[in-house]
Length: 268
Length: 247
Ligand SMILES: Nc1ncnc2c1ncn2[C@@H]1O[C@H](COP(=O)(O)OP(=O)(O)O)[C@@H](O)[C@H]1O
Ligand SMILES: [Mg+2]
Image (tube, rainbow over all chains, first blue to last red; front, top):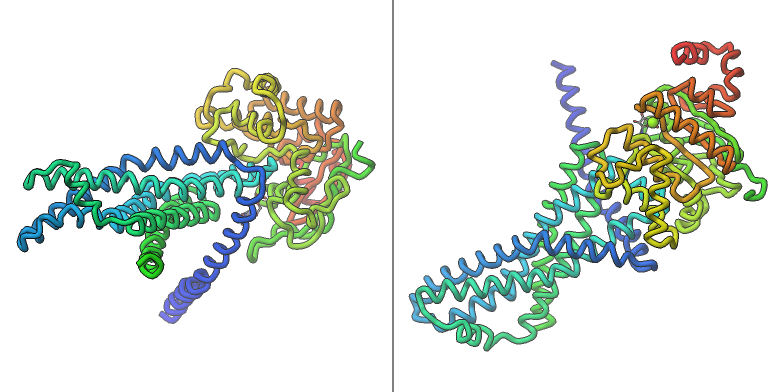
């Protein structure tokens, strides 16, 4: 009994102590990782060809999903707003509400989360398995900097592709929003778009779209970081993939709060 | 060549992982034109030793000099300059699994030489031929056996004509005939190119054939080092047990 308690106690101590410590460690390591990455990314030679490959990878992997998610968001927005707006006879505002809502918030956040799931898991698992099978060591041993060759290209690809994917999500959402709307309230696409974008200014459109570059940075950075620090065989690879998705989704949601606030301050 | 500095000098090398002490003051010296076989039970830190020498791991204490230059104080660019002259074979081959066999071998050539695509193709074919893998060029690493992966890893390690070779168990898991061919290849590199090699191996017979000296690692230290005869005449209990079991 006594020894069982002692055992349990030491187990708990094992479990708790590293937890608080490891959070600090995690941030410390992440800082270190960012410093190495920055150094590798700014100094020539640049990995142009590898970057193009990663852009294709990120773009083509996520485009169908992002388009689908954008379309679904458009449908839902249309159905929901129609239900509530028709009650007040404010149907004429529908296009504007759908367009604004998609462009300013739903499009960017949906795209960010989809990419976090699809690309984040992919990068985490890929780099993780390369780490545990010593492929990353092999790259280093052949005098190639893995931060330049593997990490910088992936992070850059995420940063560049996310705004473009967001545009695709916005476009699909608006199209499907119109389609859904026109089933109950027939309008031409042209009229719908005119009504929808009449009040849309540059400041409504550009900052929310460009903020997704920050989402891309978060996905690329966290997924590469989790992948590169993978330990412990196949199990570790699974953990790297899962934690990449969880942490980058969390990062995106938290960053969004901050970014929305900042955008409201600087682009009122 | 390369002045008169020895290829590799390791002094007082220590490395621990957490509480686990792996290397505890290892000293080694390899000249150009010389092959050193490193023996020892598995888990004694032989792979760790090779990784320390190319700077994949950082030692806790001690020094490593390649061609007379201590690698501890080098910038990454300088270290990479040295790494280009080192051919490294990983214990598990560590082929890039998204690239074909041919692309794996071409990788160092693509990165570090100005060869045209045609020149590169010829060189890759030649390298793969040396290890008897030329007809598997287009396959992915997952489609070939472990022994074949190791041979491709060897071809990749030799791509840049290195004059320092670090081979982690190059013949483990190979059939006797292929193993013999690999041993010949190592001997040839040593004779023709005056390469300095460290070969980690469990194959005593092979070690006797290819190496000038053998080093037996035990409990974090080089227990004994010398020609095969020196090991044979050793009075040490562990050394004689190791030799008895191995042959
Ligand atoms: N990166 C690492 N992190 C923690 N422990 C390691 C690491 N690399 C090797 N070790 C440990 O060091 C010891 C020696 O490993 P290794 O050099 O692979 O042995 P071998 O002589 O069989 O090649 C092993 O106990 C291994 O668990
Ligand atoms: Mg080993």
